[in-house]
Figure 1 (spheres, one colour):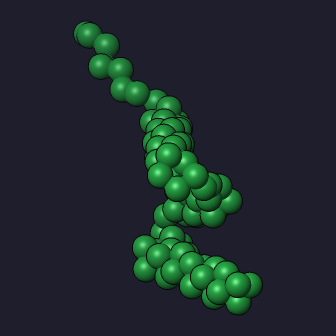
Figure 2: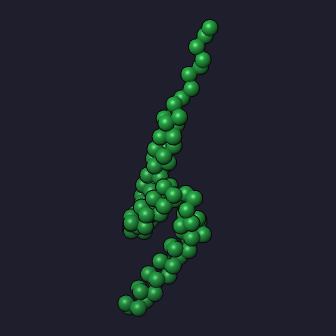
Figure 3: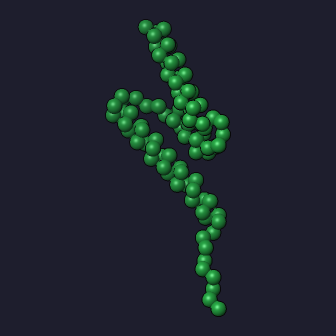
Length: 88
């Protein structure tokens, strides 16, 4: 009798997915940071890091929903513009 075809280990498959997601998230953040630096000479490190963690570590959580993420960024942008206007 021949030996059954070997199948990949389940633990290997489950370990590869988060690793691939982390690599893709890193590449996206680096791309965004380079684009922002070239276009605006600015950096948004902390918010991108927190958002990336929420989206990739807890994709089914309520804070990871696109509507909540975008509304959070919008609220932050409005607060920044108001504070900038108040300081002028």
